[in-house]
Length: 392
Image 1 (spheres, rainbow, N blue to C red):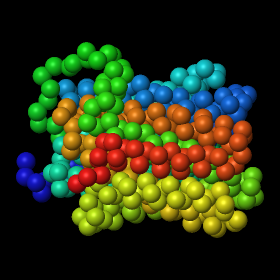
Image 2: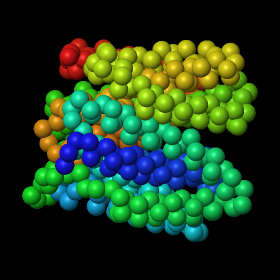
Image 3: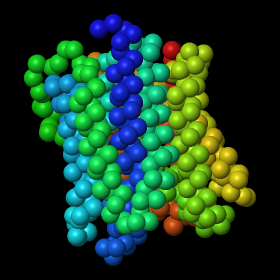
């Protein structure tokens, strides 16, 4: 396949992820309201949200291995079918238990889509193109979350179930499009499926942490923890301390998504060519750290919005760069490695919201932001010194 012909499959991949995230964005803000119809408490709603990340954490490494064995496209197709069924089952659920099962399955099958998509980008790019490919994949995620919540909000005015049915229908449409237009990217498939580390590959995660990629896996966990922690702490701080409306907070998060999408689609590749990929990680995490330190001292919602955008800029340049370096340094199949990275990212999304709310209630509104900032600072110092990942 000629290099120029690889651009079209990547376009369809980005479109696939964009459409998929629109579906997720449609339903994510509605989860608390829908769950309350089943008399779910705030704590139960928190665990319901976390069940998605638990599904990702447990199954992402397995999906990565399967994509190395059978190809990226079959895994993406399976994931879209599973996501569609999970959305529909969530809409027709008549018990809280079934809501948990459906939400868990959404996490299981979404981990397949995102892991296979990351490996697809690796297959279709050179080492020099990798950062641009990963950043545009990230931009597809970010922009999907800009449009999804607005569409879901309109549909929910009809009924709380309608956005979930609509998300299921969108996902089926996406599945058909993938089958028709997305080409397989993997040319050399693994000859057999190796699961000696264990069915869910927890041992593989432990080995990855101890190996040469351990520092990068730690950083992607810290990035994910800070991001998900912030998603809990910011609405609490904004509404309770700064007296901002929920609508205004929603607009601020949309601005974050717009910032992330713009930076990842248009700027990150150019920044990487100037300063180098290793330095981008340090730069991005530093932006996140500084904004987190300052944010709880905001005196007005406008100042908080500015710091959220600064945080978003740092986050936007960090994740694709980490994925790029992980893909370049791995000695295993790209699907396997991306699956392990996705599991570390998911673990941050499990722990972040739980600790964010707990710290806020127990130690005050400053604590989630300050603790996240300190964790980034400590991790940067120790990983940079001990693992030496910032040395070009």
